[in-house]
Structures are given as C-alpha cells and as structure tokens.
Image (cartoon, one colour):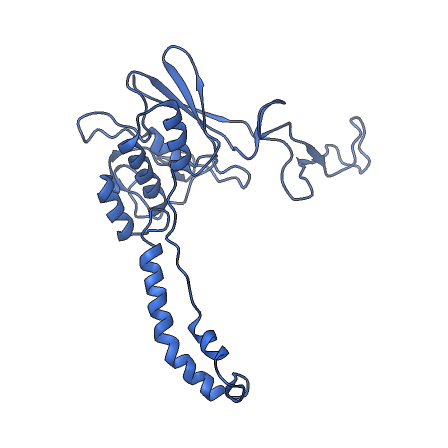
Length: 283
C-alpha cells in the first residue's frame, strides 16, 4: 500500500508571456515592460501555488498540523496518547527518562532534546512525524486480515521500507523484523498499549492468540552470511598510524583505529539487527 501525491502541472505564466513578446519588448531591452508583465501574472502564479497546495498538501505523506488531524479523525486515530510513559529525551544520568547523545552512524542511538514544555509522562500529544506513523498503523489495522503477508506489507507501509520480514519462533510466536533502524520514539510507539477502547491494542496488527516480538535492522546495510539477499559482510578497521601487528613506527604506544569506508564514504560491512525483546505481543 502507498499513497500517491496528486499530480499537478505547473505553468510558468511569466516565462510564457515573455516568449510571446516581440523583440523590442524583451526583458533585457525593455525592463519597464517586463516589470509590467510581472505585475500582471503575479496573482495568477499565487493562485496556481494555492491550488497546488490544496491538491498535494492534504495527503498522509504531506499533510501537517490541522490537515493531519483531519486525516486522523477520518481513520479514527487521535493525536494524543493517553497515560504514556515511554518516550526518552536527551539528558544526564539520574534524570527521569534520560538518554544519551546520538550517533551519526546509528539512528537508533540517543534521543531528541526536550523542548522544556512537552510532558514526558501522562497524556502526550505527538508531533507530525510520529502522528503520521500512528495514522498509517491505524489504516493498516482497519483493513488487514493479519495474515503474514498483510503484516509484512503493512509494516513496510507504516515504516516506509521494503525489507521487513517474519521469522517463525515456534510455539505460536513469530518475530517481526522491521527493515530499517528505528528511533527511540518509534520503538516507544511499538511498546505503547492503548486501553481506551476497553481492550489492549498495540501499534501494529497481529493474529489473535499469536505472540509477536519485534526487531529492526538496516535493510540497506545489514550483516549476514553469503546467500542472504542484500546482506553485507564484516566491517573493516583502519589505523591512523602504521602498525604491522607488533610494532608501531611513530613513537605512539597504541595505534588509533577508525571504521574504514569505501570510495563513496560508506562504511564497509553491515550492521547487526536490534531485537527489541522488551516489546512483546500479548497472547
């Protein structure tokens, strides 16, 4: 499932008018006349831009603020989560819900800065990015039959990836591996249990009577052995000093190492999957 943005053919009315003028009224030789053309078509350009926004900024992928709230109302998903204690923010050891700095090579490490106003517990109103994910999940739950194919397809849709997969763990339980690195906030939404309807409901649908555990991995760069589609091998360490395994030749006691990269700046090798064992579906 995917949502296509409505096509819109944009016309440059000003350039079209300039192309239709005679030589003596070209922009460089007649700046006053060109300014007159700009004034004539300014309103037409503004109307066109407004019409484009009306057609393209009301889809689930582009809507923001109140427009996104309307989509949420249509599918039955409010923006505010009730009685929540699952989001972490950057902070120092000892502070409630504090987390570390981020990592440029791993989106799943670290948390966002607290804005000084948003509640960290209780009822939390989601920002547009997280609310959009929640709306997608609600759409999936509204129409799914919770077959394995449905679970994979809707997971790819919700998290905008093509690489999600399911592994059978036995004992009426399976592991859903989401094909991209999840942020701490997204993991928090997976952990969230909504009880406002009188029963427990999680972010993603699952078959009744079946246990579901979660994991995530970078589909574009994950470690696995030969024969697995799209898999990467081991990484590579580089040394800032010459080192033959026994001797250093710059007077340093210990060589400095770094993660080596290819000619395109990408790290060699793949990343391990993360198994979110603290998030488990209810039987």
